[in-house]
Length: 234
Image 1: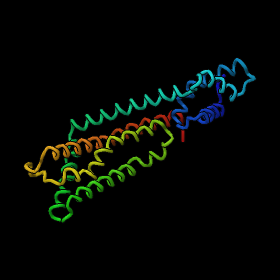
Image 2: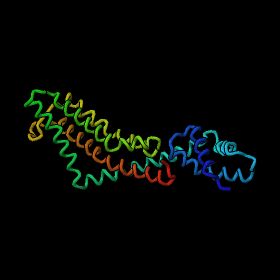
Image 3: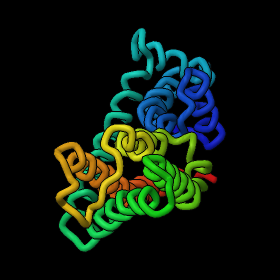
Image 4: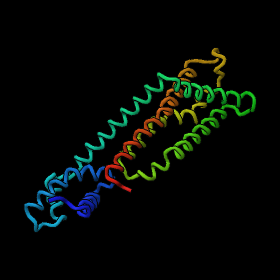
């Protein structure tokens, strides 16, 4: 027999009650459950959909559907990692590399100018770091905030949040790093010691990663939208 749309919706709700709230995880599990439920109902028409579901769930063992959930989330993680390295390589080998280069220069040189000409002291780097952090937050909200709200119950979209951790240390360094390396003039290489060069390279690496993230988020969002279209979700 073929399951009706209300029966499929009932199965999805039962899967959710088992502790799987992400919509795409529910459908991944549903793909494995529906056929078995159909077979059980054909063999024993006296069973209702709930009873058949419980029997199928029991057949997966003590951990239930957790194995299916884990394998699906590993697939998401692998896909995001692939997207990340693709975008990073593309940016490094194209004119897009100028963006993190210019941002790195503006960050350090702005802090130096504030210290030298506006009496901000080492706090200039702290102020510039906060401005960069504010920029990232605004960029995230207006570029992906709506998508995040709409797709927040998808594991394929939640996985994006882990990518943001790549930028945590560089951003923290941009806010607190002035305590350790001070301010210096990039236009005067003689002022650069080992730790100043390290600071410049570290911030440049962080900003390079940051500028690669929009492409990663866009590709991931496209994957989530495709899933939405397949199941005709609203």
